Length: 384
Image 1 (tube, rainbow, N blue to C red):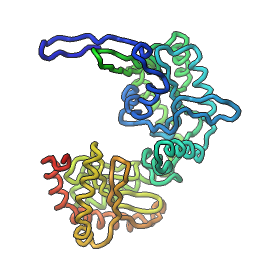
Image 2: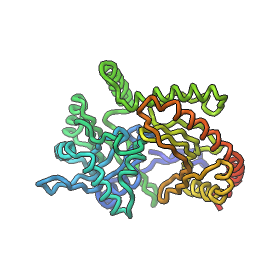
Image 3: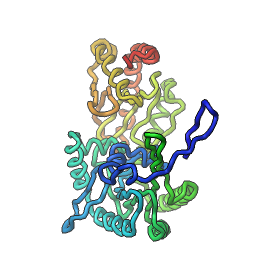
Image 4: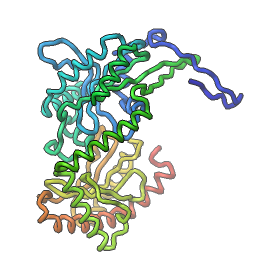
């Protein structure tokens, strides 16, 4: 790894070091780094847009043993991910340990997983585990969520160096459709600064892309032979009809939006990172303005500025709205909802009518204030 010296127009080599040499430890440091920023691990695995949700550290919920796995996570498919950290050397037994943990975890049920995560949140200062999992997976309620399905638990090994017996075993596991990965984490030193580089070495990025495509092809073939998940099929059909109806109303906002298997579709409001979303679920329909810019402070500032004008906004809208600042989260929400049996197609025309009417009223009620806030945001007022 090299640093660019702009003034001299030269490269400066960073000195590769070891964690033990610079005084870092496995549990106190490496484990904490990854627990607090799982995105670093996702980037190494080329899953930056997918993400991981850390649900426990030092998990020891195995009957009859005192063993502890380093980190336990959920991926966007609701599958458990066992993460085993080593520092300068992987050791010989890390694969055996991780496979034991994956086997132990394979029996965890939805309620147990939620309980494990709730314990973790309580130690971190509190929070709603069920709600956080739903939000991470993009679902409305846990009733629609499948967690830890089948035997598809994933295993991630992290170390600065991997012994040959480890890499050979991981490659063999992958050949047998077990998602096992090796992430190399290497510290570098430059003067008093320490840098860390994380790279996936098994599979290589090129091999990973190929395997993903083959897995997708296999999944498509299997899906063609069987019924797709009912909720996904219903969502796709619902949004197809909804977008057709929105188009006949002369709506311009959703012209470039296609039908989705997600429970929402969205369009812009004029402020980057703050979409207006239409939501379809089994029990209700919703229209939401979601404030989810990268900077948490900007989202809270936008929410607070709009909240000050709540009376005039709700007067324009013609009814009360739900204002949720979502303390502790990097987003905020303003919404309205109406109960429907969304999985009964007989109700879809009424749902679509309600979504169209409500979306137009929301847009009219907020458009002027959002345009003003966008100008103020660009002027840097949220930084003050």
